[in-house]
Length: 209
Length: 209
DNA sequence: GTCTATAAATCGATAGAC
DNA sequence: GTCTATCGATTTATAGAC
Image 1 (cartoon, helix red, strand yellow):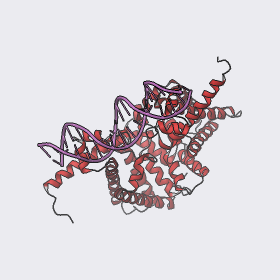
Image 2 (cartoon, chains in turn yellow, brown, orange, cyan):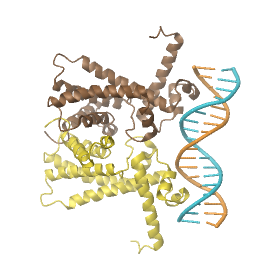
Image 3 (spheres, rainbow over the protein chains, first blue to last red):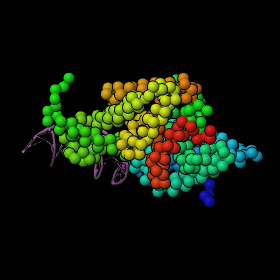
């Protein structure tokens, strides 16, 4: 579709990448409402007015960061799908994939590179719903996870008494679970141990088996 | 300690109750950062300047609402403790109490009367840590739940491979779990069913038993 | 104590020079 | 396209009349 990008286009691309990366970090630390455009400009190393030449509003900035985050999640999910062996369509493989995705999301959160989307309220939610790039990727990711969920449920590897959407919502919520940050803030545990614990409690619960 | 309250003091008490109740509702719906003092004044039926005669800052307003929320939680917990029969010190009774508390908190959230505390970031967190009334109640509640947790763990009714603080944090997090709101927003399920599901997944997990 | 009016600070967004 | 400087709106907090 596009011809070879000119130098100018490449430079612009790199510049916008720096901006989105800055937004990503700030969203992870402060959230949308407490993130200021001045901070984004400072972190990206340019003046605020220059930033507004690339993105027309703060909401668009956040949207671009969320799109990038979803792209990374889709990349991970597609990689998992591709690495499935001949037994990859079993319910057991499906639930292992779901656990991998949950663990991956928690690791991203511990790295500080997972932008926390405000689950409800916040002026951001409305603008995201009219962001086609965001909605498309969210639907895509939900469908891919939904396939694994229903396969795991019919195979008896996931509770069938729960609606599939409850499982899906739970996975999204655990990706931003504040418990992860609280345990890290205590400073007593290694990141990998925290991820293992929360993954384990998500699928196995707090009660003994 | 205090003599019988004068009419004036009673009126002031009622007035402040109306303010705190308004803050409680607004915190539940919008969160701290998006809640404006103008809204609080409007909802409480008074001018903003009058409100500032009772509370000296927005942070103090939020602190009062959180103190009230913790008081209600402590009241529920103490009620549970009092209703325990002669077998009340068993590990099984302890885990049942923990489930009751989790379910109670979710019901409060569904009612829109549970102020959502920003788990991390937010300028509110810092001021709450220097709010003695808040900290005292939080420690009190944590200790009471901690007693049940350790009793349930030693009795084999709660996984002993998890740190007690992980269990405690998880209970606090589930009280504000966004999954509850997402399921309610779908409009397909009754509140009681949502509460049962999330309580069940918290203790039993997503995997079949 | 309650009100109206306004100060003081912050923040998203833009104008205009280069 | 990048910058400095500023507008305009919002919001916390207060002054001062009653």
